[in-house]
View 1 (cartoon, helix red, strand yellow):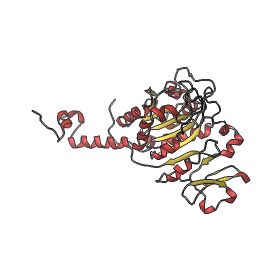
View 2 (view 1 turned 90 degrees about the vertical axis):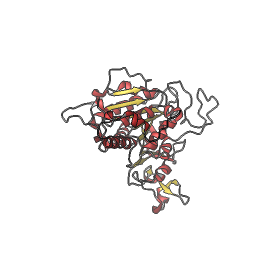
View 3 (view 1 turned 180 degrees about the horizontal axis):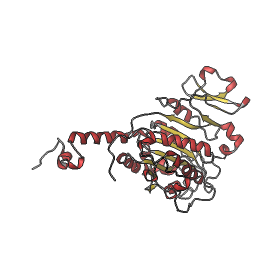
View 4 (view 1 turned 120 degrees about the vertical axis):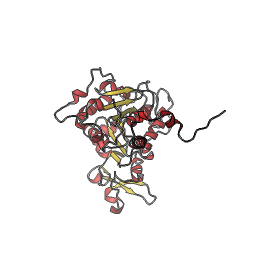
Length: 360
């Protein structure tokens, strides 16, 4: 296939759209492979949600690619009738970077887990976000290594008793959202496997974003860490704990007399206090489009292991030039200056450049 060296349009419009009369459904994006996850695994819900909204993107299946690493979540490409690659442990962001850079006609997705992405793959993940490569990264977080049978992961809570920490983990876990914001990812979101409506809305927004989108998905592992997010799945408990981030609105949780809001403290951090006691001038209004990620980062730090309050939704969504667009622009410029297609130029001269020496 011919490599497109041109600059794509913003958003999913940068990828060729399918004909308006070419109607696709979720079944068209469902492969003939048997889905093999444990009964009750949260991955099923995420898969169904993705298969359900992919037709809405208006893209041809052959212009969509899912790249995964290693882990339960990394079976994802097998179950989608798109192009895909089950790659190697932790390296999915690196492979996807090369693909997105060389092929502007593709919508490139990465599917990874908390172990795959944040342990062996941590370096690849942060640099993909730093560079702002045009990728949509789905990070399934079940706070455990599932495929390798229950070792603690970089997001396991302190004290977690697992097969590799029988006396309880002494590691302090990563907060994936904080990590992404610290790397200045241009889109950062968080959602949950069992909330289909919220999950779909966040994933759609991530897919529409031009640049690196990182979505952390709380996902239940029924075998090795069952119920890790149960407090957030119970309707009454969820209402009292989940802080839904709505752009331009106060950041609050709970209802009525139990409502609490996030406020700015005198030291520049955020705290959560009863709404009735809050000084209106200090109440935090969410601004996902703020150029400075500091407030979004502060919101991410409101998390705690007890789930007293858990911000959910889109933390950040800003526009910034992407790495892959920049590389293609450089190649395009070199081709124009060379007076024709790159294949017709003097390859030896291109490789040698101006700095060569003859050693006798």
